[in-house]
Length: 211
Image (tube, rainbow, N blue to C red; front, side, top):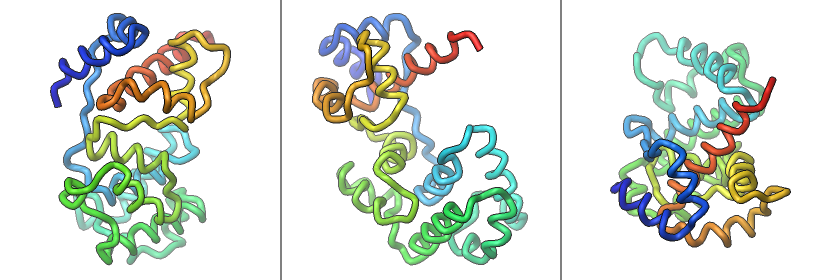
């Protein structure tokens, strides 16, 4: 991906975004190339409705269940762990069911591999992931951006994206998903990059607020 071309394109298409980019350091889309889709899904489930630190602690205890490997466990290995042990590391019952469902489907080849996704559109990848327990469109979009490195994804349901837009464009309220999607059409084919900047705006504003 040519980051400079993406930034120049976005700056031409949107003066407000251009101003944001001038104030911030250049943001690059840096997907985790070593992480499988299965691993990304399990990690995403772990982080749902939890602060990052708590999720990381649970994942650390989860990985400790597999002393035989230094890598992320394979689906079959996860399926051999009793549900009680998964609950003991901190996963909720719903998350245990989700992780076991994802592992079972992955073991049967029902989750596309990274190689297979190279022949799939963004919407085809999303459609393949949505049947998984615990996986909604937002989770699938995070996989597209941060695992597969897709450059044209705009997660319109994401709170941080909508809040970043509200702040950057000086709106009283957050935009509705449909309105954000309509406005964001001008950022194609670099909507993932625009998303990074909206997240940055929301995060920077949050950190600037007095505690």
